[in-house]
Image 1: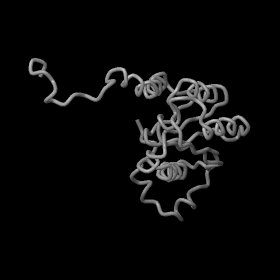
Image 2: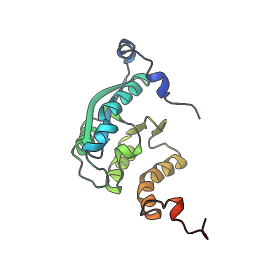
Image 3: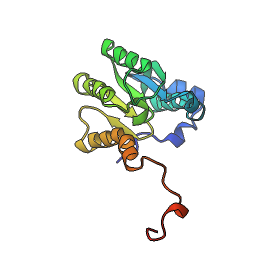
Image 4: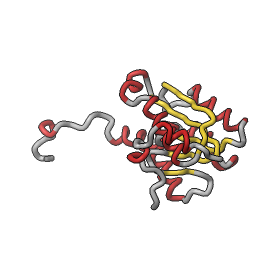
Length: 176
């Protein structure tokens, strides 16, 4: 599979190179999210934005607008996410969502269905920068399955390990 985006080379581009490179004919929106204020410190919105701006430059995409949320994605109702969906519906020339990875975009079925409706019905593409993946209505079944697994894994993992794993010393000798 060809590499769609090389994050290592992206960080070597200087600002003038990025601006010179952005001559794309395709329009995109950028979406960045963290779950809460604490996470914003370590997994910053700014880092996601910078990464996705570089990705856009390398893929000849022009960013129309940026949407940001500091809110969990486990439940629907995020302001920036809903504004992004509205923008895509009102701007048929903008057909690309740039997002760092799946869990930054959605983690619940309602939001997944809303994005899927735009992908299947309006030809929107979802570019997952860190995953080197583009998801669209012509994606293979295996790619769609991978997206589904990425969506449900955090919930599934919780059911497998509802509590932190025990330390080795806490495991009974006969089980070790």
